[in-house]
Amino acid sequence: MVIVDTALERREKEGQPIRVGIVGAGYMGRAVALQLLKPAVGMRLAAIYNRTACKAEHTLHEGGLSNVRKIASVDQLDEAVSRGEVSIVEDPLLLCGARNIDVVIDATSDMECGARVVLSALEHRKHVVLFNACLDATVGPILKTYADRNGVVITYTDGDEPGVATNLFRFVKTIGYRPLAAGNLKGLLDPYRTPATQKAFAERVKQSPEMITSFADGTKLSMQCTILANSTGLGVAKRGMYGPKCSHVKDCAGLFPKEKLLNGGFVDFLLGAEPHTGAFVIGYSENRIDKEYMNFFKMGDGPFYVFYTPYHLPQVQVLTTIARAAVFHDPTTSPIGKPVCDVLTVAKRDLKAAEKLDGIGGFTCYGVIENADVAQKESILPMGLSDGCRLKRDVSKDQPLTYSDVELPPGRLCDKLRAEQNRHFNALECAQRSS
Image 1 (tube, rainbow, N blue to C red):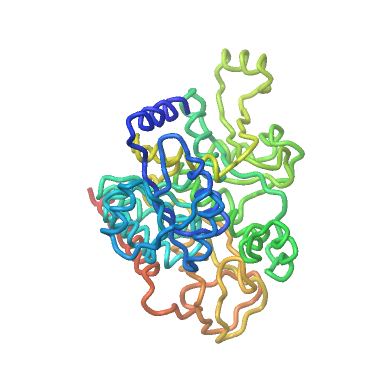
Image 2 (cartoon, helix red, strand yellow; image 1 turned 45 degrees about the vertical axis):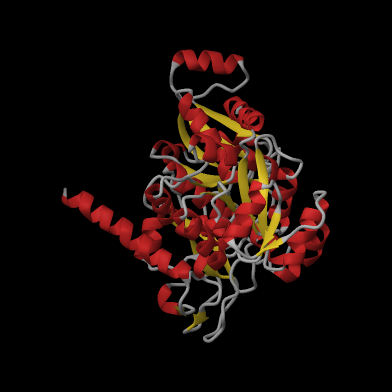
């Protein structure tokens, strides 16, 4: 976005860069930190936190820094940032309380840590950028109400598929076409993959087996499409989505039921479609002049037109998200109101009473997208809250788990936020009905 790079250049010249704190130095946190340390025009890495501080320290050393200080108080952090130093913090909440930090990035995949940090950041009036798809898909709408209340932005990142697709969705609307479908390109989908089956590949690409499993078994896909649904208002046409096989994304318009597309539209995905990365949106126009020009420019005969971005680069494109949030208060993605979709917890194998669920990318369950009103009506356990739950009874393979099937771990903030989200939007809906 040209307007973003101009604004960043101005901040660079004025010596007022956007100051960023990162929670998490794993696969994505490390990549973002190194991108900011180049340094990025108009923004700077201020501090980083990781549960194992040596990993954060290694990341900063990779970025060319040495003798990095560990910070134990907000005052120390503010002083370090004012001197242009990059620090390691011993507590992630220091990033939230520091006066000299503008944006906090949650680059973890941890529900409870993410919930605690993000809520604190919003309450301290920090903009928040999420790489934590689980948190956004599970309690994003209620966190958005906290952001609104405090006059700041919470957003998932551009560069990951929900951000790429939402940008396309907004573009299609802006040019006067009606967006009817939006989603991901997916290479593999097997809900029964586990960390054991994915271990070798995970080692090759230097990620955790659990994260790679969440990609392969469809859980991450469901969470990403839920974020997209909550940001666009598009639901799903069926539980789990259609996911048709497709040789190239440009050919996908004829693969979805036209009556479903025209009846409100939906989020979905394509399996095996070139260019094998990025995101797509199907736009609609019956205008005769549109048809003439779109045909000339190789977009087809209409009235369904496929728009796509052939890449997604989260570690690079997050810079645009940071700038849009901090300078223009414009989120890349943002829930537009009550939850539109949710991610169900489904048994990956026959499960026995007293077993403890091992969460996303594990051996026990996989996630499946569904419309939120259906999930709530059936009282299905959100996949984002499944980790650590203990089964009260046996559950068969491929059966969705309900709240009545499990005991929740005590005292979790993420459960409180989810309950608050349900109450908040149910109360709003009741008020709207009675008015």
